[in-house]
Amino acid sequence: MKILVVYCSSHGTTTKAALQVKKQLKGDVIVLNLNKAKLHSDLELFDAIIIGGSIHTGSIQGRIKKFIKEHLPVLKTKKIGLFLCCMREGEIAQKQFESAYPNELRESAVATGIFGGEFLVSKMNFFEKQLVKVVGGVTTDTSRIDEAAIKEFADLFNRSLTPSVQVSESTYLIADQVQI
Image (cartoon, rainbow, N blue to C red; front, side):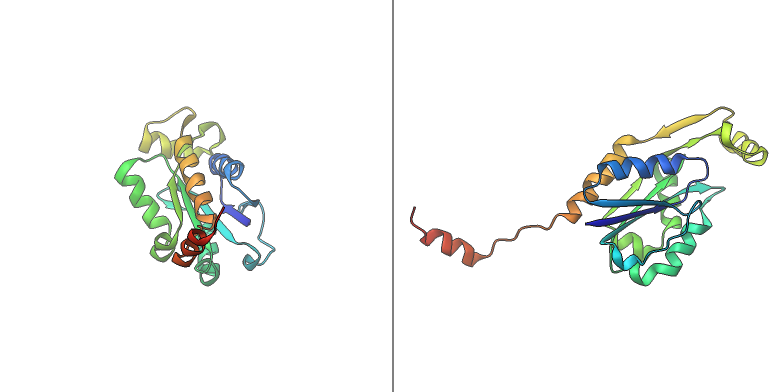
C-alpha cells in the first residue's frame, strides 16, 4: 500500500504531526511538506492520500487549498485522510476543520483528525508574535499537541486500508460438508 502524506508546516508543528502519523501507518509512506518541495509524481501512483495543514490567521495554508483544488478529481477516487493542527478546541476547532477542507472531501474521508497545535513564539516573526499575544494571550512557546488524537487517526486510517474478509453463505455450506 503506497500512502502519500502531503502537508504544509510553517513553524514545524504540522511536520511533527505528519511524522507521528507516518510512524504509525502500515505501508510505504512518503511525506511531503508543500512549503519545502513540489509534488513531482502522479497521484495515481498512490493508493491513499493524507492531507494535513494548520490554521494561521483563521484559515489553512493557501498551498493546501491549491493542492486540493488542482487534484480534487483524483483525490475523490482515493482513500483520503484529513487532519488539522490548531490551537482552538471543541466547536471552534471543528468549524475551522470544516472551513479548511471542502465538504466533498470531508464526507469521503476514511479518517479525520484535529491534532491540537503549538504556538512556537521563538520561531515567529514580529507580526505573528503580536497576533498570538493579542488573540491568545501567549508570549512563550506553548504546545498542546494531542498525541492520542494522532494515534486514533492513524489506527482508523490503517483499518480502512485492511480489506475486510467477507464470508459467503456458500462457504459455510462447503465447510459444513467437510469431514475431518
